[in-house]
Image (tube, rainbow, N blue to C red; front, side, top):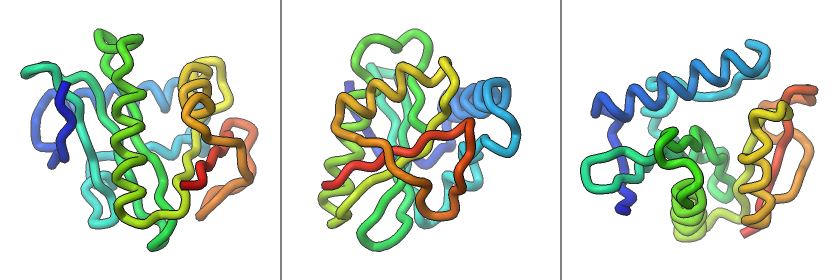
Length: 151
């Protein structure tokens, strides 16, 4: 599997992001959906990576710079076919390594509280993330939980 910086121009990447947004909107109340769309992911403060097995897309992850020493993990998603194969862990490690290279002191994230997000929450805890209060512009929300990892 290779992980590369992505410009979001390939149809299969756009399709995975469309699926991601649709699932977020189907699972969480509209005011609790914080996933970035294509234009948000193309912002100058965001870096996006995709994971590939030959020509097959396996997953996506993004890192948004909040401050010069704090990043936010965004758009973690694996394809249905790649789930359970360690793709999310490899992408997460890759993003965290990049955050360290950037000199970030911490990386934070928001995810849902619904059962749908249980596997994601377990992934983050396995990698050392701990629950934290809302950060950046987030507010307390019963449909959101917040995690942070000190680097």
